[in-house]
Length: 94
Length: 252
Image 1 (cartoon, rainbow over the protein chains, first blue to last red):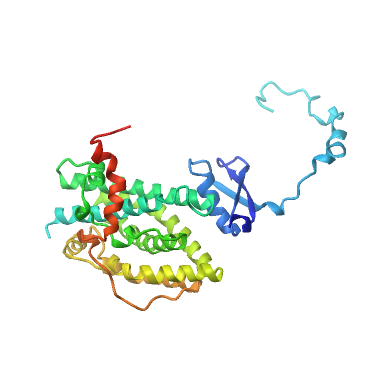
Image 2: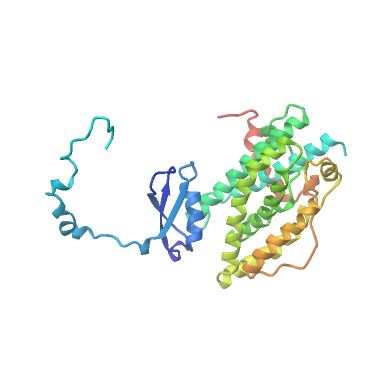
């Protein structure tokens, strides 16, 4: 039966102000049921204040084989990191 | 009926409904057709057991004989249970279990909403907590009944068969007695009869969407609310009470 149901990826916002984080996946007949299943499977211990579900097939992902062209060019660009600024002392966290 | 006796009766009815149905639903743990439904059903069972704890604890307090929720759950025999016959029905197939859940959830959602306005503050507080759980239960079971009723030929056939089979156990939810009259007059609980129209409205809408035909019989099996049960409850209690009967006071 579950083989007939599409796979959904589940994202949960743990607290207000935080972003949604991927927590896992599940099967459901449609998005509404996926939301209910996510509530039952992933928020039993008070983990969240908001749930997103998205059909896994709808996600376009980068391919591991492309990691050279995708990521290698940024390795030597240290000037893209904001490490050359003098941070005033009263700025606590950057 | 004397008010305290009526109140004890009412609280046992509420607590025994959730206890027996919670036990029935928990029988699915590890057996549901897919893991998502397995976990959802186990959650529902746990919600119902949590509500049982509250109702039966208050029942013990109202009775005033020092009995705890555990005493009432594990040390009463069949004839002292006050649950609806509906909730002790065997699980049958998954569709049958979900349809039984739906018929009960629709009722429980309505009565709990009314009980949040009870003049007995203790009852209003329990209802307030349980109503949030029941609102989710009825949303979930309504959705599943629609999905399976308006699903494949086989799922439709199974849901219609379950509905026809369980329909004679619906009427008991709406049959009041002297205890109900006493509590209604005191503003503590609604008359069961007065819940019917709201229940009909919700159930009819769901059955329509599910393309299921509502049986037109009003015949109702009764007796559970007074302690006259089907043979199924004895088996449930044998399972549920074995440990406390064989090893009195056992704890872990």
